[in-house]
Image (cartoon, rainbow, N blue to C red; front, side, top):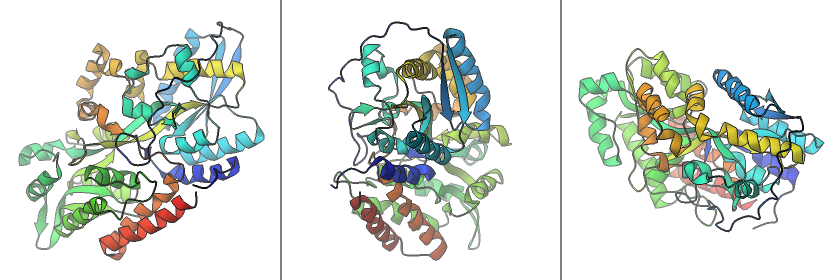
Length: 443
């Protein structure tokens, strides 16, 4: 492998990740690094310094999360009155990442920041984020309480660079009212997809009036889950594209078959996400493959009962993580790092985990919170999330390799050619594999 890039070059790879939703864990995908089992040297215990300090928290929280963020910051500052947290909205993940790189170059960084999950390896390898391992060991933090796939998504090459904060998974969101009337349930294996689709799909002649399900073609995050659940991998153990491997081609061959039979709809291009959602609300699609971060929105905006199902799987039964975590800038001052560490622990603590999930619409990440009385009340109120939390250990990250987010855009390009140009499915994926390898080999 070539010599690692300079910080400036690393920035290019980081910005390439901005259209990516999620990232992968070592136990379920090629190229991922499992956390190092050798403990990092412990940090020297710090006395409780209550010198007043202000830290900036650069974030990408959407408008719907601001009420929850303000609540959390107020609770934190009530507990630590000498620490003032200044939240600074920096736009979507791509904008935030660009501003972080500019801040590093100017040597004027915030203390703590969000980081989109697929971009973490780039920032970690670039030396931009602080390794949290010594602080974890010093304060004896029980990290086993985190859902391990979510936690490992924020580690790279044996170092823990962040904690999961706003975590989503890709899931099937379905019209439960319709399915109850039809007497069907969402498929859990690929073998169940055809008999399920035959019962849900409706046609008038050759015209499909209702698809059984819709799959996004505009984001590789969704396709990767299908590839891996079918036994393939988008990135091999030797850090090359796996799209042209027989196990990976199974996914795109199946997509072609399901589309040809009118069972599956795949959207692509500008406005495809909005079109998919409208088709779902109009009863033209029985279920949609989408992010769990939108489940709350679907529930609040539909006039029928919403259900949620984990993606169907065969060789594996996983869903990939999306969203963002929270990390500390390595260039911050020591006093700011100590304050930021308290803030990171607080924002991801078991005590507030369910309330933060309820405010944000994202997933709880702590097992103790999920199993608490508060957690049980939460799932009574939001039963749609139970299907995800029942599979919490199967929510994993994407392959962790800095150039991967840039290379994986060619999966999306291939899907577009299949949908819009009717390109042969195997030819499209083999071409995508060649283009991915050009990016991976150039790193």
